Structure formats: structure tokens, C-alpha cells
Image 1: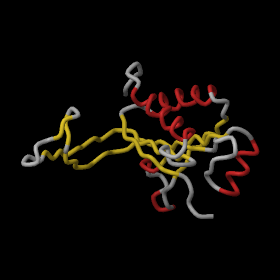
Image 2 (image 1 turned 90 degrees about the vertical axis):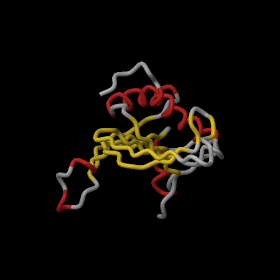
Image 3 (image 1 turned 120 degrees about the vertical axis):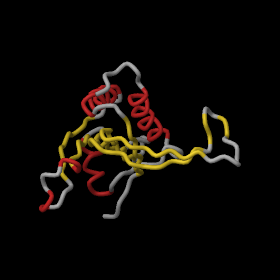
Length: 158
């Protein structure tokens, strides 16, 4: 089977325990079940490298939806819903960004502003949706759930 689903990555300072706890609450609101797994994507040589250990919550409505996913991959059913997944790991972030806008205002074309980013301890979340949020109200709602958790200011930050 070929790859399916639409992947969205998020870096944040929100710890996995907090995000997954809030995620489980959101799943109960929409009557979804979830399976939790701890997965290590290292090869045998680097098996004990903790950087590639992922916490995974795979979410589905019922057994039929889960089994259909196993056969067809990520998809939207006739009710407009589907399986989705969130994965998380502790990560480092090393990057460079160029700002084109600041405080919702464009930056002068004659002036470029580059930022080096160096974070030793962040969390990376990968959300896999059945369809692009721009094309699916359901995917848009699920992506909105994660954004609302990540934007929540009433949590404990590590």
C-alpha cells in the first residue's frame, strides 16, 4: 500500500504528557477511541538512541473504521470522518528563518531579517490527517483540536 494521509509538523514547548492528556479529552468529546504505542524507529545499531522514540496515539471511531484503514489507508468515510494519528517525541530544533512579516506587518523589501534558532529541548508533534484541512471539515476540526491544545496558556511548561 502506498503512503496516505496528510502530515503536519509542529514544534512546541508543550510536554507530551500534557498534550496527550488533553488530546484524550478531545477524543472522548467526539466519541473516538485511541491506541497508544511507544515506537522506536532506530536501526539495530542505534536501537538505544532515545531521539527516535515516538509516542503515538492512533485514533478511530470504531472497529470497522479501524479495519478499513488497515486495508485502504487514511481516508474519509461516507459520514465525513476517518482515522488519524498524532505522534510526538522530544527533539532538538536547529534552523534558520527569514522573516518577511513581523507583528502582521510586511518587512521592508530592502531589509531582510534572518534568525538562527537553537533549541536543545523541544517537542515535535506530527499529526496525520485523512485529508487536507482545506478540503475537509473533519480534518480541519482535528487540526484545530491540536492547535487549541498547543496554544493553551493554562498548562505547565517543562
